[in-house]
Image 1 (spheres, helix red, strand yellow):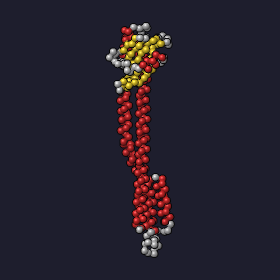
Image 2: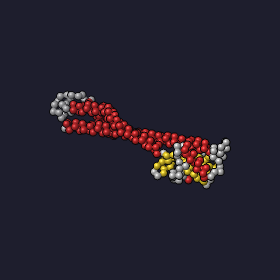
Image 3: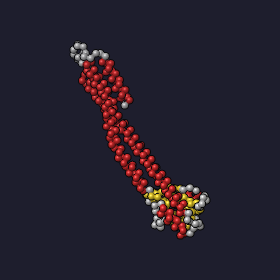
Image 4: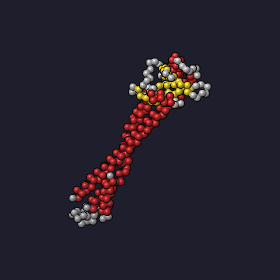
Length: 265
C-alpha cells in the first residue's frame, strides 16, 4: 500500500513537470515565431514602400526636368511631326522609357512598338488633364508591375498656365519587385534558425524554472516514505518515524501546490 501511494505521487509529479515543460516550450516558441513573422511582414512592407517611393520620386523628377528642357524648344500649336520629336527627345533623356505626348487630339509615342494603352489608363489621363501637378499610378499589365507618370507641360518664361501639352512616361518596376522579393526570402530563411534557437533556450529556461518543483517533489516523496515507513501503523514496528511529524505538513503543502499548478495550467 505504501509503494502504490508513492508511485502515484511520482507519476503525478512527472506528468505535472512534463506538462509544464511542454507548455513553456510551446509558448516560448510560438511567441518567437509570431514575433519573427510580424517583424518580417513589417520589414517587407517598409522596404517595399521605401523602394516604391524612391522610384516614384525619381520618375517624377526625371520626367519633369527632361520635359521642361525639351519643351523650351517646342512651339504650340503643334503638328504630329514635332509632337513625335518631342516624345522621342524626352524618352532619350530618361533612360529610353516609353513616352507618350498628347496635344489636343494629337498623340505621339516615342517607340511605336511599345504598347502603352494598357499602362496609361484613362484615370491617369483625366487626373493629369484636370490637375496642375505630376500624377502617377502603379498598374499591373500582363501580370507585371509598372509605374505610369504624367504631367501637364507649362509655357516657358515663367508663365504658369498649362500649354495644353501633356507628357506621360512608363517605368518598369520588375527589378524593384525582384529586389524586395529577394529581401523577403532572406528574412524568411532566417526565421528557421531563430525558432530552433528559441526552442533550445526554452528547454533550458524550463529546466531552470521547474527545478524547484522537481526538488520539492523528491523531498515530499521522501517525507511520505519516512512518515508511512517504520513509524506508521502499517509498518509493523513501534519505532519512531525517521522524519519528524511536521513533514506531513510539507506533504500536504505540496499537494496543495500540485492542485494549484494543475488549476493554473
